[in-house]
Length: 108
Image (cartoon, rainbow, N blue to C red; front, top):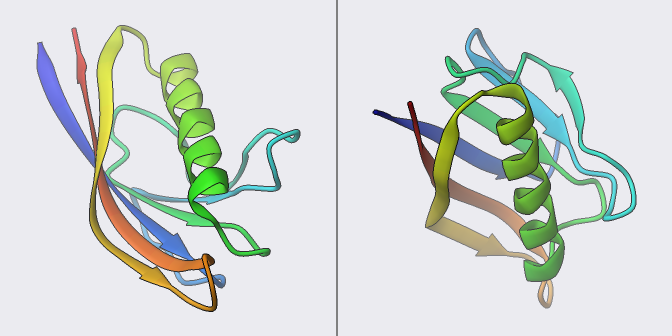
């Protein structure tokens, strides 16, 4: 069993991304996640997630659940997916303008 870690950054605008990074766009709860650049594979180490309307706690949770499903679809034999927030930044009201979190999972 191998434990993998992915660093996820919630961003409020397009940023540069590099090798082994992925840019994912969230368009709401009725539309699938869009992987703009990079690929969701076991070698993925960094993900930037963008939502042009600003995340709330509810939409961020929905986005992360969709990301979990995408991981399970693209990486065989993974389990125990969880995330821990390192930092979260709010703009006006309950809008999340940025966040850093660590997503971890195990695979056989």
